[in-house]
Length: 121
View 1 (cartoon, rainbow, N blue to C red):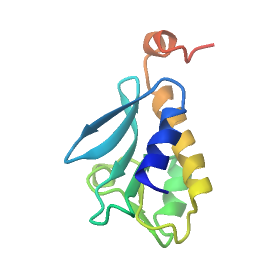
View 2 (cartoon, rainbow, N blue to C red):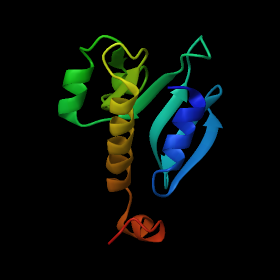
View 3 (cartoon, helix red, strand yellow):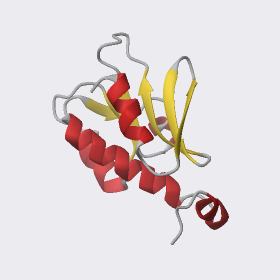
């Protein structure tokens, strides 16, 4: 997946918005919650993609080739995975995990914020 494809996919998710921060990373948020980070690779043609995941997905993915606990985030007890290669996770699976990450992040918004973003109901 290219960075452009990543950004297009994340933009298609409800109430998602994009900022570039943290050393040029493409950060996607739903409301005030981050759900995906793209970039941070030394090779622009193979960006890393970082996402929030469930406890069970984290336990499985952290052992898969091409995936690792997300630097900084996972070391603080958060369940975030970074896909560094497509070795064991193709782009279709990545999109599924990004969608789930969006859902997990939105679930942690206040009810008021979900309502204001059109995510309640």
